[in-house]
Amino acid sequence: MNENTENTPETDVLKAISYARVSTGAQAASGLGTDAQHRAVDRAAAAHGWQIVERITDDAVSGKTPTERRPLPQAALEQLNDGHLQVLAVARSDRLARSTIELLRLYERSQAEGWTLAVLDFPAGLSGPEGRMCIGFRALVAEFEADMARIRTTEALEIARLRGTRFGRPSRHSETTKQLASRLRSAGHSLAQIAAALTDADIATPTGNTTWTRSSARSLLRTINHDAAAQANAQAHQQALTHPDNDGDPPSQHSA
Image (cartoon, rainbow, N blue to C red; front, side):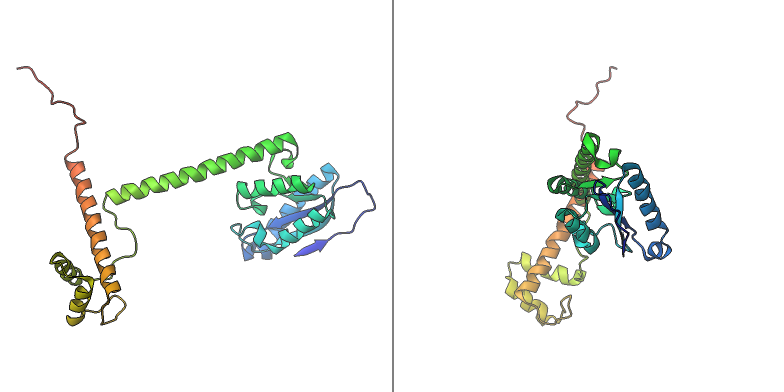
């Protein structure tokens, strides 16, 4: 929703665009969230001497949607790049960008194109050295937190694997089918022979097909190996819990 306001004749006043966003339809219908955001920008404009010439409201737009995929902010950025406007003002950073990294890119774009990105929940609204330092610091923190989250996820997955957690989709093969295929493989049968044996036994594949192929037999054997690895990890983990290593320390010597 765009709302144009009347231009004033002053030529030395920076022309600004006020951007607001809400995520849900209920918020958009009430107008309370966006009204408060625009009022905050109005107060900042009065303090800095900006002229609000346009108000843009993104109704019911998720913050997960990148700025480059939102038509209204993109239209505003084009006007700023063309020099028709000089300030893009937003009450809170999360209304404009989904992450500090994205906000940093917008800030760097504003510096390159010669307009002002005013984010009111940052020191000095991102203007001046304080604002630049703050957004740079937040970007570093955001990158650090993302890296740490990836490390924690990797470590958690490794611990779960060692405990025998089976990842991937649940097996849709019956135990009878897996046992038969395992015995055939142990006996040295090829994939084609295993597929033929399962077909002759009138065993259906997980998709309901009554004819097994080399590919479906290979998939079954991968599932068997996956299950066996998970079971071995679980047994090793349980053994480590019940018989922990003593880290090589010699047994305690007690005097008589």
